[in-house]
Amino acid sequence: MQAKTITRIRPGHLHISTSDRRAQSQNTQQRLRAAGVCWTAALGTAVFAACSPVTARPPFDPLPEALVDTLAAQPDMVIREVQTQVAEEGFGLDVYEVIDGYLETNWVTIVADENDTGELAPHERVVRFRFWADGVPGLRTKLTSEVVHRRTLDPSLPERLVEIMVPSDHNARKILERVLIAVREQLGSAGESVS
Image 1: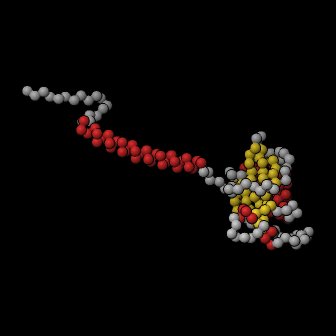
Image 2: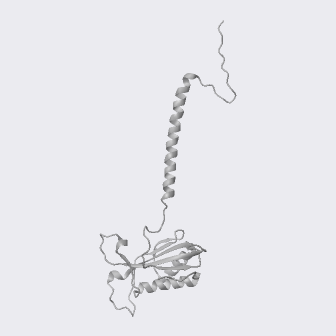
């Protein structure tokens, strides 16, 4: 009589013959590698997205001559009020983002008033307003504002390299100051303005 081979299977386990184990192990390793590649790619994409935020703000800082004021309000409230005041002046917006605390007007032509001496070149009358609203401690906001014109119309140069702050007697500077006074009246100043 031949002895029978009995294989005992524990509850919850499947019997795998010795000859199938190697092939099964290789298949499992391949599936795990493929899953690992997918997870690595997904993780890399998530890390890249987290490290390179999308923002409406330009990749440059305000000019050193920009006006700075501290207001007693949150950045979103400040940038909304700036938008209201800029709209009152009749300027169109190129960029307006409440979450980023940034506003930029279209390029606008400032017409001469009765006090204008006519010394400005035509390209010096075309200006753009920019506003950055950044939160500071104490539930306040630092509002940085600039109004720029191009010092030259050379198309071979990057736009920002040819922009300069308008002089203090420029009509656009008077408009900027008028906007800032209106914003300050609406929201309240939380510090001294810096020009």
